[in-house]
Image (cartoon, rainbow, N blue to C red; front, top):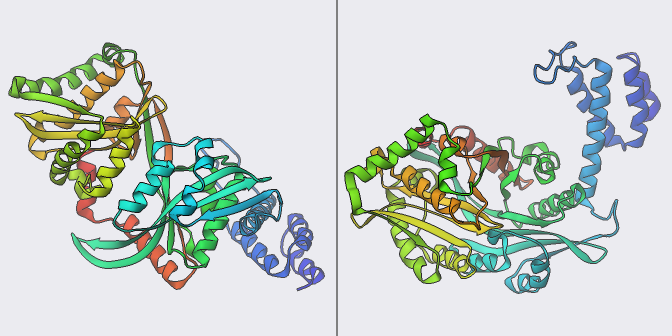
Length: 459
């Protein structure tokens, strides 16, 4: 297709903005010209007068503005894909290496130490997970170098897993696949757009080479470059159209527990203290709360917390805490570094509620919690949570309580910082990848109604 016929076809059809678009097509190869035309046609099929945005108050866009917007978006998308496919295209200073064995990961220890990271993205945490997790296959760690100096590191672990579609509690479809899971907080170092585009490009190469069937990002901020590129770079059939987006909550701790309660309204204070009084009035001095921090305490904590977790509604939704070698060894690793903090509430000597998290940068990051449904009417989960907040407020080291990902009413009551995060997938560009995308989309869009009902009732 030559430029002249293309212009002669477009000019009579639309206004002068079309002429600008046609002239700009000379910068694209013939296949891209057709894609750009289709892209612009999609914009031009919108109503001539779109409604005013009630939030921003922006006036409707005319056809000229829509064509210019479509052209600029397509140009940007094309450039990003080119960077992702060939990191040296725009910046020859960038090089990439990938560690696929435990020995290769071990060789990165010094690089890892020089890049700031959280406890769950440490090299020892990854190596422990490889050794003890049942379905773990191998590590997958990407390092980006700029002029030979390590700048960005992505921490991933390949596992064998399966996804299911349920209807009325029964599994109607189960699909096995191999997934590369990116560790929570596993993108370390410089997260500039260029670096993130290279990371997505390398992950796409692994998908194209069929190393894995899917890539899974866990709890990444929706405003981050990595999230936006994960939705732009993959082709339409193999991108995640239903990313699970939830709020992430964080609470600034008060100098003391008294200050925490003083910050609440009189009605809020009454409701919080009523829950505690009801439990203590019934069981009096038969209530104890124990803190677990050391390595020697991990086996007992895992055993008792797992017993509670099996009874709780949380285990029906997210699987809960399991007392297996992987869990015990991973928590023991955190405990050896003084990064583990767990609590169990006992009633008449029996464990009835638990919660635990990890310590990082003067913050307590809540990971798992649960309670025995037998004590649901006493609000035993809320009682333990309040006691932990009191303990942390009275400890000068802690400045924040990070409640983590997933919306809940009690988090809204306590937290002063909220932002959006998402779980998002990339899929292998094959027939299996397309089917997996459809199955995952259906499972997220239409979850089992029983699990959905439990989740809503227990918020």
